[in-house]
Amino acid sequence: MPTLQKQLQQSFGFSFFREGQKEVITKLLAGKSVLAIFPTGGGKSLCYQLPSMLLDGLTLVISPLIALMKDQLDFLLSKGVPAARLDSTLTREENQKLFNDLHSGRLKLLYVSPERLGNERFIKSIAKQRISLLAIDEAHCISEWGHNFRPDYLKIARLAKELKVERTLTLTATATPTVAADVREAFGVTLEDYVHTGFYRPNLELSVLPVAGDDRRQILLSRIRTRPPGSTIVYVTLQRTAEDVADYLKNNGLQATAYHAGLKNEDRSAIQDAFMNSRDAIIVATIAFGMGVDKADIRYVYHYNLPKGLESYSQEIGRAGRDGEPSVCEMLASADDAVTLENFSYGDTPEAATVAAFTRHIFAAEETFDVSESQLSNKFDVRPLVVKTLLTYLELEGYLVSTGPFYTEYKFQCLKPSAEIFARFSGERAEFLDSVFRHARKGTTLFTLDTVEVSQAISQPRDRIVAALGYLEEKGDMIINVTGIRQGYRRLKMPGNIEALVDALNERFWTREVNDIDRIRQVLAFAKQDGCLTRHLLTYFGENHAACGHCCRCQGRKPSPLQPRQSPCFDEQDEKRIHALIAEGHVALKSPRQLARFLCGITSPATTRDKLRKNGMFAAYDRFPFKDVLQFVNAWVSE
Figure 1 (cartoon, rainbow, N blue to C red):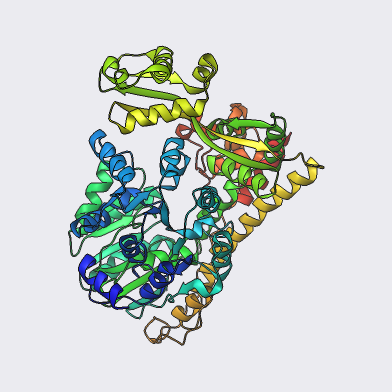
Figure 2: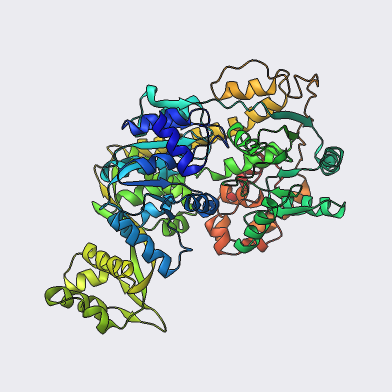
């Protein structure tokens, strides 16, 4: 394909394609939808960047890493590719330019987050465009049985049809055969258009070292000191572990910094920039770090704690050695870590009674209704993700259909006098705008209006009000902030047997719980594997491969048994402490599962709202298995 080769050289400055790239691009240019599974760092982004230059229309890229796309966007702009990202960091001028470029056809490639698909103004605007290619990054999130299921992803396939997208490209670095089949089915990708280059990275040396929990810091320090300096990531499970380990390494003379989601955005950005510009910095991080980071010379990835699954492990070690040079990926394996990981899985499963109450609440609504996911989260004391998942399950079972999200409250600041804005309109359109503005409540600097109330008051469709406000924003007449997001639904049918439906919903959550626990046990099995570690990992992803010859097993290090988990026991003092907590009468801890979550250090909307994290009993039993804690408190709370 001389044309492709020429475009690659002229537009991107690359002299050759990486494995799989040309095959994917050729299929897309032929009008086919493609699923591409490349290893981390395998060059997935070029598979939509280059076609965006050759296809008529817009390439829309959906990525949960939109906030981390700056480097990729800067690269594209430096090569003259008309690309942009739409997020909340844009100034008014940048936002206006983006929409002007979009509507004029100058923009060829646009990055948005999955959440942007919940913005009705954006959907109305993008629906007017010809979308020649829709690229979905982290596509494994669509699979209910994947390691990072996001219910919003299930709706992207339906949206692609509504927007009349001409072809789709689904991309991921971590998908088992089951997950890949789910993605292909959702987007209509044939087996012939499934491109899988394989996960094998010959320059990565995989190693597992069984350790006792108390010895880990010293062992990590020793491993770092005895190896040549190089950029290093140390992955941990908890934020406090990141702080503790980074402090320990710093106190022992190493250049180490903690990174986790609890830090301020500006601090995380500064830490990441410093790491990117250093050749030997050490970053001790939770999984909040690494997504979207394109640093070629990371020489070491240590797993101080066990990863939550082999998918996560594969993704995290994939950040090492992208320059092709030898890199070490070592897991300091302790069976005690499984307790923390399992507790989060058990703690996320809603109670059967909660699922029943939620389901009855939904079917008590009118045939057409809308809900606030945050309000439902607080009402039923479950995480917003559980609410999203329950509603998605009801959609998948054919009981509901989403009519789309909308915002009830629009806050806007006029950037021009209203007289100047109205002067561009005449007749009925001017009267319509005037009536909308007259119903806006004036604050210190912002006007506020409830679009539903205004629609009813002026007898005009709400869609028209939203479209008008969106138009004025795009023209630079105002800045808009929206709040009060609600999800609209229409009930398609009532359940014939609501108890059976509730049982089926609970079964799905329990199955997910079992799968999550099994992923953790797969990691333990990997750590104890006596054969080639690389081959074992590739087999998990459905790939056959010979022994690698360079992992610790192939180099002759025999597996040592992991030390058995510590099994702490409850005593009389524990009983007294928990009885005292129950006697405090916290409504947020009224059920056995709520109490067990709290004792294991798992927050819920109710415990957060009541500020119970400050209670000394929060996370007091985070080293105890969740099921043991639940069994211990069950009789007392039920009394």
